[in-house]
Image (cartoon, rainbow, N blue to C red; front, side):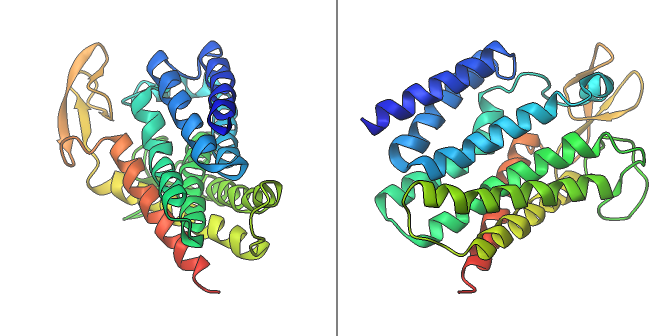
Length: 267
């Protein structure tokens, strides 16, 4: 019955997101699978955190959307999230849910909080940081970069990342109580979300500044993520082949999860 409830809940959320054009068809199917597993193999704690990430990121993506229209042209994927983006953000969390179902351990909870805090912090930093009046700076050199440039950070974006991490950490405590799970320390879970989220978000920026594949537009010369810009094919400018934004999200969320796990081991 729990799997049926999870499937129904996931269908409602994913279907609504598809209707609102937040998800593509492949993204909706991926979200349906993911949501079913999160609730079926887990409970309200795991599913609730996934839902919190998804709803908050979807709402923020609509924030001053008209101001982000030109910037989105430089991204590899824009608008509706596809299956690759859905699994890049929630796939590691789904694996942790399944591991916890097979081998129930407290460590999975902290690892999960860090993973989901990372994807939330990174999304908040991107969506809010790009609206900052001050241009971002390179996370490595401090050099001023164009708004939205890979590897760029700003004070506004960093504060947003911290806010996203705190939200996931604090909400995880409430969701554990709601799910009837053992009571963990509120402070510890909040710190795990904060430090895991911020560490993961900065890792995302560092990877974006070093190994993420970036291409150059052959028309305007701008460095972009996408394979096309200005109506023409782009050429690789730097980074590793196939180390796209989805791969960067995946690796950074793992690091954020490890940081949260280390915070959890303090007790």
